[in-house]
Length: 96
Image 1 (spheres, rainbow, N blue to C red):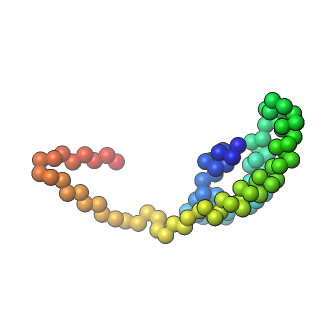
Image 2: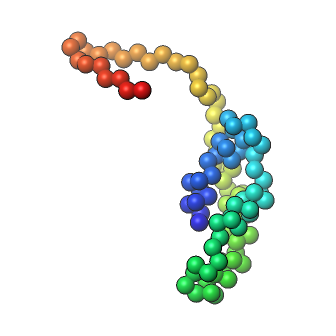
Image 3: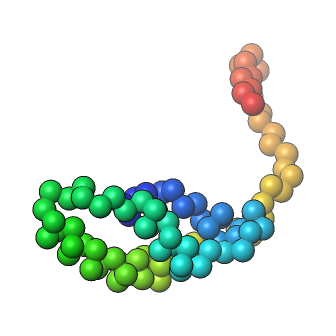
């Protein structure tokens, strides 16, 4: 479950970033988690209940820790010129 949020919730979109959207709120994380939680997929009902009781704390820890890991983009899509100097006789391979 954590990897789903960790890998599927890209930081630029999550925090507004280049998309210009407002950053999500803590309630958005709750909503996403609830949409993904599948009741009855644990082998033991007790295990599921134990995890369910800890959800708020685990999501709080995730929410409090993740923004601190986000870097800040100084520039996006700046023009540049890339000059490659090839030895004489060497083919230049260009792929878009």
